[in-house]
Image (cartoon, rainbow, N blue to C red; front, side, top):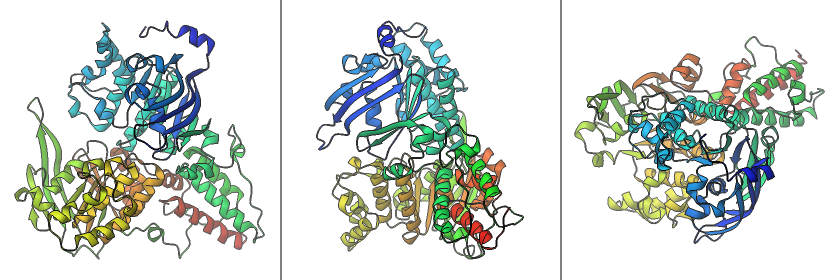
Length: 632
């Protein structure tokens, strides 16, 4: 109904199983010394759900851009090899023709929204092709992605999750056979992220679309995908079923990919069990997926449900300490200290002078219809020295707006914010910049010079700070940027850009650093590196506030969590008070990290917040129980 498929009939008859066939493709960007794709050969089955994984710079996005003709028709360079999509040779058909068969949602999906209202944008592609029923196609696409807002609503009034749904609607409005989504959950709160994947599953299973995602979050891959392609240094290393791919532990780690947390925990515990069994008179059981009634034999679980069943079975088979509260914890093991976390709002810091004090802050803006949209309702909160604050909540909760008020870039409608004695309403952003540094969600916005060193020294040089060169040297060394200091920040990898933006912020010598989604769009290995650097920030500043959807970062880094919902603060507390409250998590659109949810299902008291913490507690409880000869 929606496509003229006469060009495809002959090709589909000859090659019925493969909707994508890539043969020995090599591509080099102009001026680059090495190819970004290097002899890639790959085939994808019609109707499959495929995840393309790999570290930053491995060639994932470039590979996918060959499927809709952007390479080589738009991004020029040295191209060799062959790409066939739905029977069409991409070299012989332009991007406009290929877009009929390949829909693409880019990582920066907001740049795809080009019309003023929801229905206008969803209908733009079929209108551009001259279809008389373009509005019906747009409405159908909105229905498929379950975007239930008023079709006449302006795009800028949508939340981040709704914008992502709209970009997806625009991509499927031509009813393509293939749908490519680059980082489906980037910039989305955990609940919206799951909703996006549920939509992709529906499009795949109920509407027969071939789905290709570029993804770093292996928990989503394990639950939703069927096939995994590993990219490394421009090569397609392998393509395997998901239950095999996520258990290639050594190869994944060498490519800076971390398997799901339940898989990591099972592997760590198995290694410890092998080491300990040699010196103990204990017969440790061998437990694989086959023992759990799963279809494929493999050593470790890959989903939360599998993990819960796996460890519950281990509890039955292995010696364990008998205690009434689930898996116990040894007396000398301090879970919070192990994770580098201290509790917020203790007696040690409540008597100090506040760094930031917000009292009854309200903020709103006027819409096109002249109505006022309330963003912050009545926010009162105080921040003190030593606070490492995670500002969390669903898209549109008011997190970024609150941080901009602290910088003085925007002013409160009522109430007041005082930063180190300065009322932001009466102080210019330039004056507040000496005290507060805001590090943008897109790090490239921090780069104004042609080298990292010049960007780091810009503020110090402008303020004529004595000895700034030595300070810049020390900062570059601290953030691992010495060898990159003469590179243009805009040309660095995502992880390098994040490190550089943190260095620029620290160089401004602020009392407060505000960060907006510092780990977004990064592979897991780079996210861990950024988390380590964030833990070091308290040596440079008095207070750090991070707005984030990364619940692993929250669990591993923050000593205080502020939960926002619809412009209000609904919880200000520790990780225990937040992650231990299921109703709060649901209200705020949050989900606990997988390892924490696993420990909850197993009855651990207290809960485990990291893989290392979970494995250590499990091993200690088993070792002690085995030493006493206790068996269940």
